[in-house]
Amino acid sequence: MKGLKKQLFKLMLIGLITTGLVIPQKANASTTKEKETTTEYTMKKAKKEYKDKDGIVRGVVYYQYPQFEGTSEAIKKINSQLKKESSKFLKSESAKSIQEYTEGAIENNAFYDEKDQYYFKTICKVSYNKNNIVSLHMTEEWYAGGVYNQTDYGLNYNLKTGKKLTINDVISGNAKDKILKAAKKYCGSDDAAYKIIKNTKTYKFYFTKGKVYICYGSYELNHGTSWDIFTVAGKYK
View 1: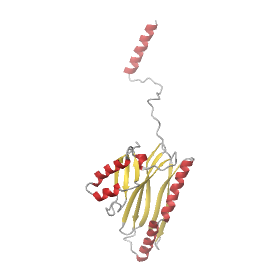
View 2: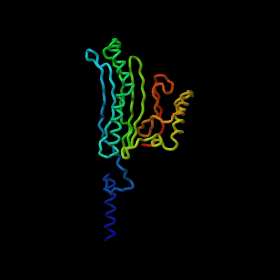
View 3: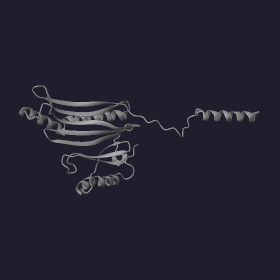
View 4: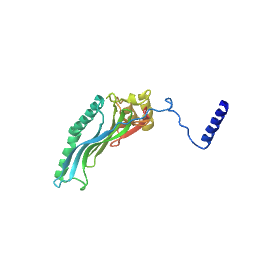
């Protein structure tokens, strides 16, 4: 009798499989992945504007930055640092120069048209945000009457510890060797630019899934107003 029951169960199981039905199974800890979590944030901005006599904004100093949600000391520390960076930006020499150039252009009616506007601004994009690791891609732009400069860089943090990530934290193995190998491909025959990259002590970088972006601003590689960015394989997927 027991043998007959076993045969009947097997036949029922085969019937369920062939008809496309799925039999529920208990979750196996070895096959389930840890849930990837992101940290919520609110994008903030610090701004100063300079207007002409008609009330048209002719100069802007602008800094965009996130404030992360959470009550841990690490997140409080990072949020405080980011807010301080915005204050420093508004008081910087480059910010003062935009004010001076704007006031001079207003006085001398030197703008190209009604839409022409001088600015010093930093736009922030959160390029990586998983499991308490974040990378902020910061794009700094400066423009005053025909002269435009740009510098990209990153602010990279471990939200759990509150520490900034270094280039060695985001590239596996020998980071310097990998950067120089990528730089040779990027620079080609430009040995002068490669030498500058080789002699760089602290690299500006941000990262996305699987890629680290090494950044140089206008004039840094002797390429005039052009800015330079090349990639290296990254540790964070």
